[in-house]
Length: 271
Image (tube, rainbow, N blue to C red; front, side):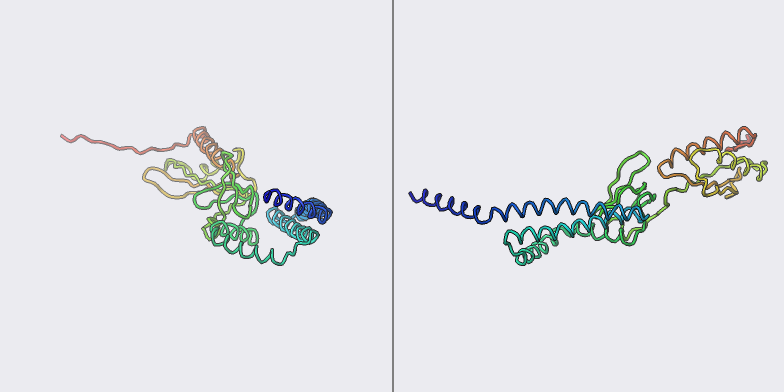
């Protein structure tokens, strides 16, 4: 009998709560759903406006996300107030929980802090070619916790932002430097060799037209004059262009009868 009375009391309480607060609950749900839709719209509008104004994509996404979260926070406060729930104790409780969670996830928070620093200081932007901690690729996305690179093999590399901030960072924008060296015989005419190499390099697909190749005598070897070649090419095609350059230069030297020497030793037999 006691169990039946308890069940009846619980049922009566639920019915009374539903009758008293049903409209407020339904209203809160409607407010939340409508607010969620509005927050998404505002976030997208802000992001698109900034992109149309030629503002950096990363900063545009970040600002749009912040606007969305701010609007959503206001909507949640309004929805809770509609049900009659005071948000002041809730905010205090969330603060205490946040403090404890912050101590437990310091590593994750470090990534978010580093991501915020990258977005504000902009040491690189989407589309740049960077090298950090031995990893290189084109920046695809800059998120708060991590940055995504795409290398020449189309592999997506996810780097935690705390491993980027404070490290030595190489930013080559869209193009990456390719350095080559080739030796020719001392009997060769230096000016002719430079012109042959320059012509061969200029015919290779992928070599940047914005920066002229740098070609000149780099050093003198035991059996060759060594020429240095510096050209720029898209990072996503680095190795493809490098191999094409080597082949084009070799073929051009052969076609112009310019010798590429190799080490030789003379052995004499003494009686």
